[in-house]
Length: 103
Image (cartoon, rainbow, N blue to C red; front, side):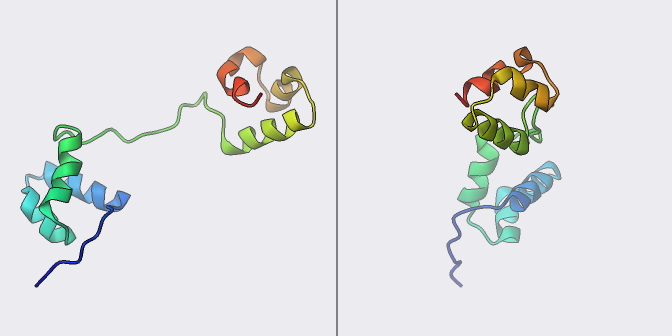
């Protein structure tokens, strides 16, 4: 029985790999459960040295997509950074890098 080649692992599959790895399952068993080649599972585990990565989360200081779009439109309309910052409820010096990329 030949396995079909699947190139990418979904985020859910990666979470499952890490759950099973923490429970002590071997790479071969994990691969069989996910119907993948052991080498693909190995790459996921090896990438971080066998330690599951911390879940990523965006910093509270980062601009949201909606705020970035609003900045882009405002700059396109010729408004100043001060006006844009006041509209977003902040001061210019709170997000200097974020504004710089939109110039």
